[in-house]
Image (cartoon, rainbow, N blue to C red; front, side, top):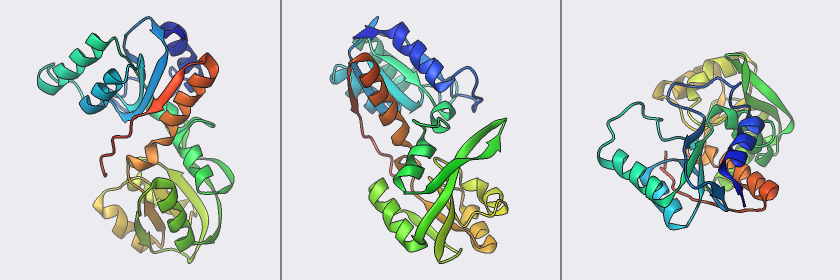
Length: 251
């Protein structure tokens, strides 16, 4: 058991919340106060109403998410938005969100963890955005089709694939989430295979024209790693219980 203030400050420091730039609506850090003490931590990808309900029903004191309560922008506190606030407040559930700070973390980040799960050799950060490196790159042994099979095992479902590059997986870049629009930049960097969550329609045809292999693993599926790892770090550091709420979108 630890105080919410202590736990929140720990995550702010570990994830460098004040230093990492992000998209509008991310509002990284503690988004909703709850009980003053934390015994049980829930982790999930999205702070959706079903997830908040499940966390409250499970007796969580703190919910860690990748996409926070304000991801969709400013909206009237009515309907489902009101219900989500009401459920969290009545349950005393605190909500903490970390988007890019969790994507780019060198140990707990979605990109680093997925690169490790895919077995990439000599992984290192890559792809600068607003002064930070957002992805990871490394070398994969074996064929592209073997890497696709491994990605399916790691992510729990067969990914969508553009097999327009070399037969060997070769140099692989990993940028989780909705990074498919970066296909031209990735190809320009001399990457053979790009692993991401999802992309716009044109990213597939662009990859074909550029001779780039792409594994679209799913936005949700590629972003479960960070929140799981962060919750486990809190459990280890503060002696509390943690669990994951799996609420896939299929996207």
